[in-house]
Amino acid sequence: MSYVITIDGPAGAGKSSTARRAAHELGIKYLDTGAIYRAIALILAEAEVKPDNDEYLREALSKIRVELREGKVLVNDFDVSGEIRTPEVDELASVYSALPVVREALLGLQQEQEKYGSIVAEGRDVGSVVFPDARVKFFLTASPEARARRRYAERTSKGEPADYSGILSAIIARDKYDSSREAAPLSVPEGAVYLDTSDMTEDEVLKFILDHVKAALSQ
Ligand code: DC
Image (cartoon, rainbow, N blue to C red; front, side, top):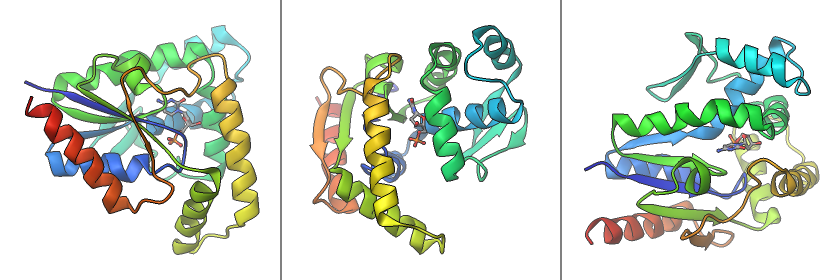
């Protein structure tokens, strides 16, 4: 019997690495819904489909085919996995993901992934909107400072330029926007296990998640 585990929360709370590692440990698939929003935002922006025209958006969305294959994101068969991880796409994804027409178009694609077996889904509304009946739901968060420290370390470890205070103010601004947007504002899904990871290592977070999931699956 397949099952869904959801992990929601703000950027930088450790969702991605936790979800990826948890899926690996459980021997199931990892669904990165943020990657789908990023890919769509990139393609819409490149095609100059402005976020303020629902009709054009709907038409453009009907022509875009997003696929998740072996950890890669493909748009109309074109691999955009690398291109979607830039600060520019952070901004674009935040804008386009706030649009109800975009969220509606991507709902089915996300839900469909359950057909192919058990998944750990990660995002902003996967426990509330996409998979409300998930077996176990988590909400991972961390203080803005802890999240900025992690982002800073991530960027510098890749040799990319990084400025801690700039990252921190971007995180605070993004949180405000993501929590107050009308479509699917960031919120704790009903029944989710809430975890503040500010003072936890990645291994500790992973252990916490796996312990909970294993206890729930054995019931
Ligand atoms: O998790 P991420 O940074 O890759 O997400 C990219 C953007 O997409 C971010 O602005 C939040 C948004 N998003 C969303 O609105 N709903 C999701 N389920 C996943 C991501």
